[in-house]
Each structure stands twice: as structure tokens, then as C-alpha cells.
Length: 276
Length: 308
Image (tube, rainbow over all chains, first blue to last red):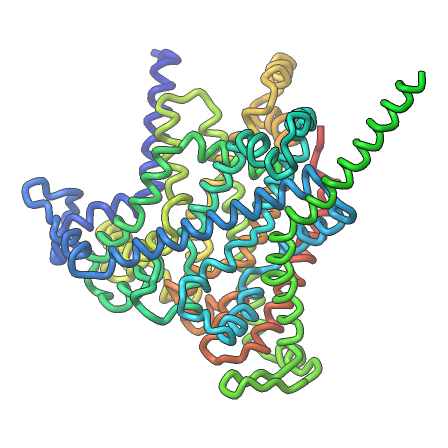
């Protein structure tokens, strides 16, 4: 008996749902392990969740006994300050290169673009030495400053302002606004979407950074979440359940932002990717 | 008549001065970006090149000119060539796997499907989660004796399951595959967007003409999504050349140098041996490699990328 097309669709969907679950098995295992006691981590047979004896103590231990809250605060601070400065620079720069223009602006912008291909590991070498000279090593500013100038962000804002309707700005001039006022009152409110896009992408990118804190920071109390995770792993290498709980806690903020703004996030990637 | 002329002239003059004002303001608006670019991108690039020519002593802050000695040292250093080889092996696995997997996922999501949103979320989750956190998980997940994967394999009767990160043959491919697993969500999103832009009319017309599923993909879908594929190919290559996190967190370049890619070689030379000059030379070489790869692809795109 041939299956109805609806039944076939259901079966196919179920198969790919399963494929999707297999794809994130490590993360499911992480969740499961984080709620176990250490002696249950490698138990056989495997139980996903001990419903009657869920172990929340890993989480409470991490939240009260480790520096996790400090790392979280550090990450939030670094990300928020970096993104704020980056967006400001990108908005001003994008308006200059895309809308206002000046002599040689296109040529200068081309130079900007060429540097997109420089490996970040390379520019961080002289930055390390100069930060050492001016005493910025082992401060959060060493993490923030290299994030502020982002050519890709300026590029995306420029693309937006290239096709910005001139009539709107000219109308603002007619009503007596100066160039800065018309930028702030007319152009920026209409640039909400690209700014949000950039902010979202930058948030995920900077939250993830590990190389910069690895080379710039020594003090544990300055660690961001990725560094904290790494130091915890080297210090408590055998406490797997605890490590998984920490990994879960590290993922929750980004997962939360992602699930809340999933649609915008996907649109952000598409709009920035296809134009990039 | 006169007043009209005057009006036109003053209008022109106003337009002219407005343009000039805008240009001046443009420089002002661009100033933060320009200064930042000079200070944090261009100057470091010049410095890094100079750095590769000088011997730097960080204790005494002295610099000594050495010509191209560090490049010479690099080119005669077997460890350097191993790191180049490892980087290329990483690329050869990471790039095709990520692209193929991303396209496959996008094709799945583009087909008629129930619970598509949930499946899509599953596919994207590794991409958005904190990289270091997922690596902490992979570290235990692939533990050679206790990890769940090998426990499962052994209970299925596999006597010598792979040793993953502690085996010189497995380590690098495993790291590359973890990289693909992490990044493929991005490719999936972009491929999906491209597939949704492919007109159904073409596909239906080809189906009526008797073209099978594969031929429809080969001759209609693939050319239409080729600009996206090309963009992703470049992004993936650049990303692959700069891969670093897995080596730093899972293997520290080992076992026996088998996962020391160029980026890890740079890191170790600079921040473990404090040889910034040598690290800069390797970094310049990596930059050169990036440019060559992009150049080759740029000229190669004529053969397969189709712009509407």
C-alpha cells in the first residue's frame, strides 16, 4: 500500500528532526551531564535525566563558589562597550563614506577593504607590544580597543547610506537643520535596521572572543567567560559535571538572545552576508 | 528675466556650497574611523612588517635590525613547513565539509517539511553558542577512554576505537570537523536564503521537460546560487586559515606537532617563546597565503560563478 503524501512528509520530517537532534548531541549530553553527580557522568547504561534525583548543586556551586558572576559581568562590560563604540564609529564612517563623500573617500575606502584579509593574529602582535608600552596590558581596554574599528561594520553602514534617499536629507536642510542634526534626526532613525543587525552580529562575535583575553589578560578577576571556562577546565580537569554546568551557564545568555531574536538574527546574517 | 537668472544662480551657488559643506563634514564624520584605522590597522601592519625585520628584546625594549634573517630562519625551519602542511590539511577537510554540509542542510530546510523552524534551530545552535564552551564539551565527549562516544563504540564491540585528540592521525581531522560542526549553521542560513531566491518557474519548466532531480540541481539551482557559494567559499577559506580555538583548547598543537597550524605556530612563537619577530614573519606569510588563495579564486570564479 503506497503511503499518502502526508504520511511520507511526516516520516521525512521526523527523520530530519532526528538528524538535527544527533547534530546537537554534544550539547544535549552537556545539559544532561550538568544535572548529574560526578560518579554518574560515565554511568552505564546511560540515563538522560535522573528524574528523581536531579543534581542542581553543580549550578549553585558555580554561581556561589566560583568567579562565574565576575566573568559574566566582565563579558557583558566588554561586549557592551565594544559594540557601542563600534556602532558609533560605523554609523559616522558609513555616513561619511556612503552619503557625504569627500575627495578621495572612495579610494580610502578601498584601502579599508583590502585590510579585511589580514589575519587578526597578525595585527594583535604589534598591538600587544604597544599595549605593553602604554600600560594597557591586563586591562579590559586591551580587549575593547581592537574591537572598535571594524572595517566590515563600516562597510555595511556605507552600503546602507549609499542608497539613502537624498531628498529626505535635503528636506531636513530646508527646514534649517545642519548636517549633523539631519544625520542624527533623519538618517539615524531610518538606519535602525542595519544598526540593529550590526549590533546583534557584533554581540555574538565579541562574546565568543578567546584569543584576545588569552594574550592580553593575566588577572583572573578580569577574565571574560571564554577565559574563565578555559581556566576552570585546566584547574578542575576531572570534574566533568561541574564543567558541563559551567558550559551551560556560559551558553545560556547567547542562546537566550538568539531564541528571542531568532528571526532578526537570521535576517541579519543574510543581509550582511549577501552584501558582504 | 533678471530675477529668474539671479534665482538660478543663487540656487546653483547654494548647491555648490552645500556640496562643499557636505564634503567638509564628510571628513569630520570619517575622522574617528580614519584615525582608528590608521592607529589600529594600518600602523600595526607597518609595525608588524618592521617587527619581522628587527630583533626585539621585550625586557630591555631594544630593537636590532636583522634584514630578512627571520624570513630566512622561517623558510629553513622544518616546524614552519609542518605548520603550513597542517594548515593546508585543515583547509582541505574543513572547507569542502562545511560547504557540502551547509548546502545539504539548506536543501533539507528548503524542501516541504513539518517542524521546519525547530530543525533549523537545531542546525544553527552550534554556530551561535560560545565556542570555548562547546570545545569544553567536545573535550569530554571525545575522551578516548571514558567519553560517551567511545563508551558507545566499545559497547557495540569496537575493540580499538579511535583515540581522537591524542592520536597523531586523527587529531587534525577531528579538529577540522569540529570547526565545520561549529560554523556550518552560518552556511546553512546563507545557502537557504539563496535557494529561496531560485525561481520555482525554472524548476517546474525543467521538470516538465523531463529533467531529473539531479539534473535540475546541476543545471538550474547550482548556477543560480553560485554567487552565494563563491562568497561562502572565500569566507570559509579565510576562516579555515585563521582557525585557532580548537588547537589552543583541545590539543595545544600536539600530539607531536600534528595540530600545530600556522596560527598556533604564531601564537606559540610569540607568547610562549617571546619571539615576536619570527611570529611576525610567519604571520606575514599567512597573510600572503590568504591573498594568493583569494586571488586564485577571484580569477577562477569566471569558470563557474554565474551572475544574473
